[in-house]
Length: 192
Image (cartoon, rainbow, N blue to C red; front, side):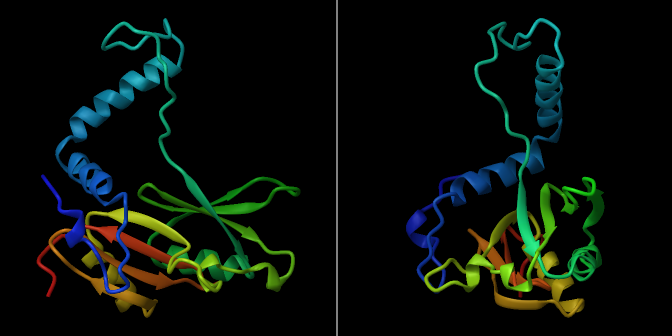
């Protein structure tokens, strides 16, 4: 699918450089689940020992595959912050011990690490800084419309959008600590 990058601009003139790659990844995930599972199995076989060779071409592995990421958010009230994300369908997991205590909230491939602030003034979302981006975290989805509808139904503050188009759709919500999370990608149905 060829995409004209000049057509992909929002009202602020933002033209994300990763749009084509993200669209390709979303499309690939939709249509190639079996191939992805097979690739993951091969990567796991290489990583788990065996001969340390790539099963497909017999060559030594030359790169490490990054399979996910997490974003750290310093929060004022751990219970309120975790509750906010749990209400949105995120799973909850306490991590660490007395010296390194934090919470992972995850939904799909998005993981946010909630870390308690020592002082409330330590909570400073980058999106609140002069000249900062309009988001603190950006996540990709194949159902921007469904997430926006869910947030609206739960009374979550949507601070930007939703903007729908045939090429790229997105909206930005604000969480309990003022962090702005943008969800971008395609829609599950024709947005009205």
